[in-house]
Length: 256
Ligand SMILES: Nc1ncnc2c1ncn2[C@@H]1O[C@H](COP(=O)(O)OP(=O)(O)O)[C@@H](O)[C@H]1O
Ligand SMILES: [Mg+2]
Image 1 (cartoon, rainbow, N blue to C red):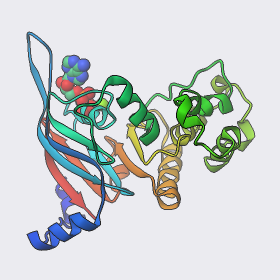
Image 2 (image 1 turned 60 degrees about the vertical axis):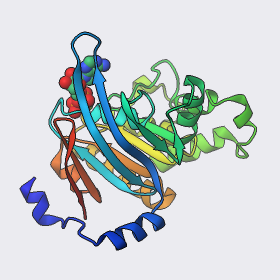
Image 3 (image 1 turned 120 degrees about the horizontal axis):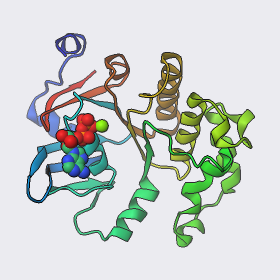
Image 4 (image 1 turned 30 degrees about the vertical axis):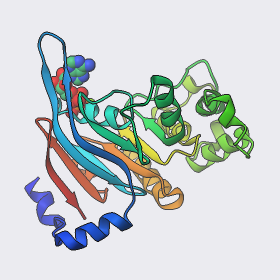
């Protein structure tokens, strides 16, 4: 990490400017003193008192050794899990008092997930897989979607370069293509945030590069916020902000 520190300069601005910056930059995810403890008998404290703000439209990575708490952090940000103490604001909504159903709606409307394993349904076509987040959207909100969902899925598949395999069975395309399909699926409901957990951990270096170029393009064109967990320093260096987790705390937070 010393290397990274040399290449990027840490933000070093006065508290007054910092405050003004906060007013201008809208945060899309905000963690307030978040801790996470697992277990009932034997307690494992995985995250300790983390406060962190992710700006809307930003392109950041989370790095850290295996077991440092990266996935736990991402799952909390994605409302897949709740903090033991502290609060999380997603798009200015506190998740503290939301019911399971309310959380599911917030998640479905705001967040797209990309995991290391794509979790496509193998017996469905690529197009059908991309349509799934729309299909599980609550009926009420479906009415608000003006565009034709199939048309949207097709245009997303074009965007990720899969126009030729739209009707193919998801099990019959390459690993890199499957991950692209998973990205198109994550984008289906116009999420403000994409949370990606080692999204290229399973891919060769060529596909990895393609996926990151695609993420950057989506960030530039759709202004989708990206938060990407990676163990690959080269990948992290392509992002604008690197957050390092060590022993459940933020060890480094570097902005280009
Ligand atoms: N559901 C769980 N129950 C108990 N311990 C867990 C659970 N999930 C993760 N852990 C523990 O929390 C620590 C951090 O895990 P994780 O967030 O997956 O780390 P990373 O993604 O950085 O590898 C590890 O020690 C792991 O064993
Ligand atoms: Mg992990």
